[in-house]
Amino acid sequence: MCNSTHSLTVPAGHGRTFEVKAGQFLTITDVEGQQAADFVAVVAGDKSEKLSPTHTRRRLQSIFFDVGDHLYSSLDRPLLRVVADTVGVHDANVPACDDTRFTVDFNVIGHRNCLDNMHEGLALHGLSKFDVPEPFNLFQNGPVTADRRMQVTDPTSKPGDHITFEVLEDLLCAVSSCPQDIIPGNGLRVTDIAISIHDADPHRRAGASTD
Image (cartoon, rainbow, N blue to C red; front, side, top):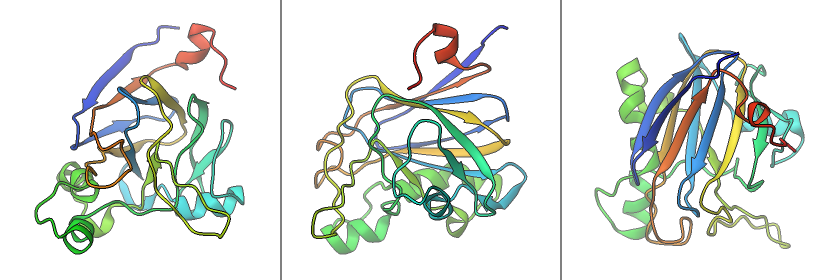
């Protein structure tokens, strides 16, 4: 089977929107390391059904996910399956940074932010800002402390680290290279994210382990 690949780059601090088909495989790569990538998806043709961290946490009975786990929609349907993950540290709890976050918390007006980054492309498909789902924050390091507090600190990801999903439904997706450069979260250096869409499992083709 021929495994054709379509690739695109999410420029540092910006966003990109793209579509994937059921049966394809989606790889999201931290090109230079320590860069968080907000990731959202809606079912193609039905913006009311969204990839949902909340429903996924309930289904998995965990705030974390691992290879072999499914990510679920707002209708409790599996939309993606994790087939490879070289990092193992991601966040499914924190909302996308937005204009208010930078204005209120940092007194910075007009800073690029993940919500606007993702909405820029999704708006072309008829989605309002309120339609943008809560994200899975790939590569983001959000530990829960011993006193049950949530933190966000710099990612553990190294250059080339990636996560690959098997796509189970046709999806419209958006990814933001998180523009946070004021506090830890991206190593205080915002960099590119790479997207690859494969027609077959790239890890199986290469003979690499997906464990």
